[in-house]
Image (cartoon, rainbow, N blue to C red):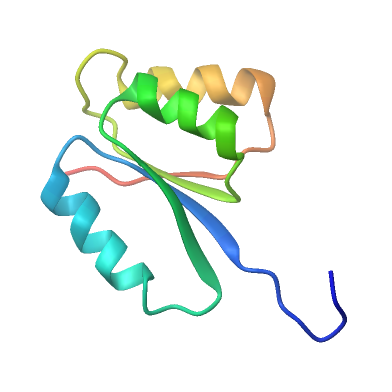
Amino acid sequence: MTPGVQRQITVLIADDHPLLREGVAAILVHEPDIALIAEAATGREAIDLFLAHRPDVTLMDLQMPGVKGDEAIKVIRKEFPDARILVVTT
């Protein structure tokens, strides 16, 4: 990293509701120190995208089709115990 240059925090959003993902993305785009790197609509996609991108922070919904958010968290944390995952659910 170049001295004096702050690295962006990378974020993955995992939620089956497109409107929620779009809303959070619209907020994050205005934050210069945050980079939205991927969006997932299912728990399986969340796992795959986490493995592909290794984000600093994952925003995870619990209620998603197929693999649920809590199951996705267990899979991710098994390989990456230090993964930072925030549960965002309604």
